[in-house]
Image (cartoon, rainbow, N blue to C red):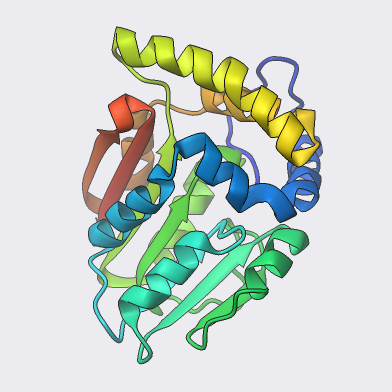
Length: 244
């Protein structure tokens, strides 16, 4: 959960300062993060998790890496897929998000504090799949992110990215403008007590690269058969690729 490249938007800082602010933000909202995700997505986040797992191609006994794992919602679902013989490593740069994740332990899950663009202690080719959900738009260097994800998986392993996006068609765009620009900041400020956190969300989405650009970034970092699809009327995108 760092920050993607491409300048600033709506008065947001960039670079190291933005990374610091975002990390502190996630530390502050960790206690209400999963509740707010459920509210803001009307519970659809669990369905999207299942789509990530399907795209990962994971089987019982496999190993999975979940980056920007936050409070561990997707991490736990991945652990359920790989079963007791499998293993899941969740990595995040927010201590408080990881503390919240660890309050719901699973025997086949390990959580680590770390940088998604520099995975210290993660051996090359040590996972069958690597995932990231809602975290890529917070990463400053997307090439480093997908380069590390590709490095971490075995040849033929899958890399999957789920992210909030700007819808392309008119009606979803109108809904998006109302929901993410107005309703989400209002709800987020009242439930989390942190107005900046949920005004940051729509700004970070507007700054993020287009789905076609993200596909190209994945390809140039060792992934093939890169595909993507829009979900929920286009406000969510799911990208997947296979390591060469």
